[in-house]
Length: 166
Image 1: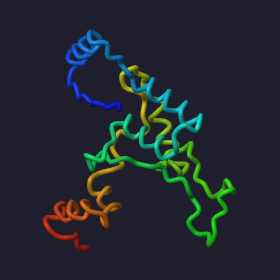
Image 2 (image 1 turned 135 degrees about the vertical axis):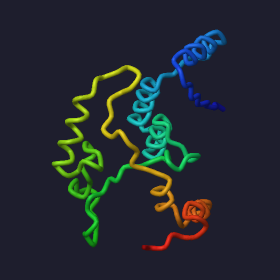
Image 3 (image 1 turned 90 degrees about the vertical axis):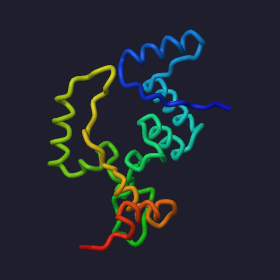
């Protein structure tokens, strides 16, 4: 059985001290890039399910069930919400996964891509499409409201009662 530990080291100096200490006791270092590559290979070989793959990607991205602001996310894969019956063999029922969900409209996509292209590639910080989180405690609780403990958390978020419309 394996276990994982996540360290949040606030300085490069602390990170280097930890790296040296781990090397001294023969604990291999895993970078997020190497982990992502081996994960992708396992998914391609069908050794892990789509769900497991996406959950692992969420973990690599720092998402967790322990923080409502960093709750795991899954892509919206369908775009046809009006048909009485879906033909899942028809590619037209799926959204274009080459575009982030916030960039499905052409104007927004142009803005996102322009900002992304203007970023400088950095080994410690890869380029990104969005600089702020699209999930928050309130958004997470909205989707999970009918499940405990999220019902209770939602009530706490709204000062002890369910939110009332203005």
